[in-house]
Each structure stands twice: as structure tokens, then as C-alpha cells.
Image 1 (tube, rainbow, N blue to C red):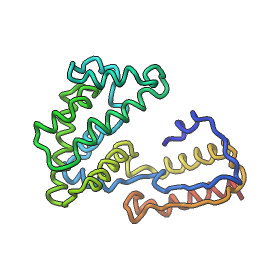
Image 2 (image 1 turned 180 degrees about the vertical axis):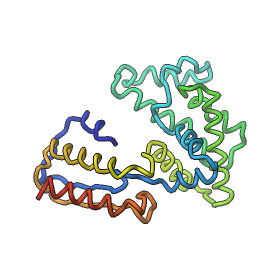
Image 3 (image 1 turned 45 degrees about the vertical axis):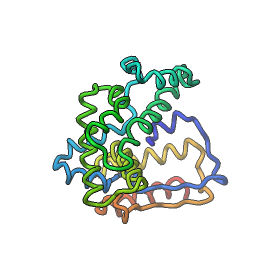
Length: 239
């Protein structure tokens, strides 16, 4: 979550009751799945487009009106929801529900035919802001990748598929791998200011740092630089 989003929550923390965990991949993130997808599609730009199907902001609830009579049960569920008239939580709640029920589950189970997959993703495609045609193209591309994983990598259990989908959701919103050293330094300074603003002006009860090297989420060439910036930030803030 971005600092700008955290600020909207308007919360305070007390050092004596706080456990502070800082992940290196907050400053510069690499996704093993992103690397695998780029290798599969041979195109980084195309890969980012495909992963966009997992991002909430690309779905428009205003398109609910385009659902046909066979989806009236879904519409009724939406209209009766207490979230229907709350602008703050409405989109987040419903897009999350849509993605889980009408996209994520379509990749689970045995390998689906093109026709069955299209039927399964009808609602998520119709609510895609750029139109159903664009959604169909991108969703089928990711299905092609998932079919490849099930066949070649033997990722055939629902748990395996869930893990890949969760990683895809994260990868779609990650910053670029090769962030500049200057940008990393700026982000460390923004985090320093934010921690101070929410009340952590003295050392919290516990501080942990997660490098995320072995899982592939932190670019190896940036580990030492990020470590230095984090230590510098903590030293200025607490010591």
C-alpha cells in the first residue's frame, strides 16, 4: 500500500505497542512471476497489460447496467447490499467480489475449454472498463499461460493456482524492477516522515527487516543500497 493511501486512514501508533516490519521490496520490487510471464510472452509491455486484469481500478461498476437478464441474481445481490450507497467502500467491495467469483475461480479446477472459460468470465469481462473485447483478449492470454503451467510445470492443484493468481494480482501493481537509486532514497525519506507523523518518534517495541532475496522479490543488485538507506532512515528517526 502506498504512503498516500495510508495517510487517508488517519491513524496514530504508540512506540510501546508497535511492531515495525520493513520489507526491502517496498523500495524496489521484482516479481518472479513477472519474469516468468515476460519469458512466456516475449514482451514486457504485453505482460503488464495481461496482469492488469487483476487490478480493481480497471473495472467499472457503472457497467452493471450492461448485464443481461441471466445475471439478474447478481444485480439483485448488488442492489440489496449495504455497500450499494456507500461511495467509500462500494467499488472496493464489489470489485473484490467480482474478481473472486467471476474471474479467479475460472482458472481453478481442470483445464477449461475456450468456450467454458468465456462463459465463466462473462461478468468480469462485461465490467471491464475498456470493454468486453479487450478483456476477452487479455484474459485468454493469461489462461494460455495457466494452461502452460498446468501442463509443463504440473501446477495442477487449486492451491498452486491460487498462489499464482495471488502473485499475479500483486505483480500487476508492482513498481518497475529497475528503480533509480535516487527514487529509492526519496521513498525512504517519505517513509521516515510518515513514521514520524503517525507517532513513531522513538524506537518501537520491535523492528524487523525482510530482505526478500531468496524468493526473488528484491533485485539482488539493489539489496546493499536499500539496506544502507533503511539503516540511515532508522538512525535519523530513532537514534
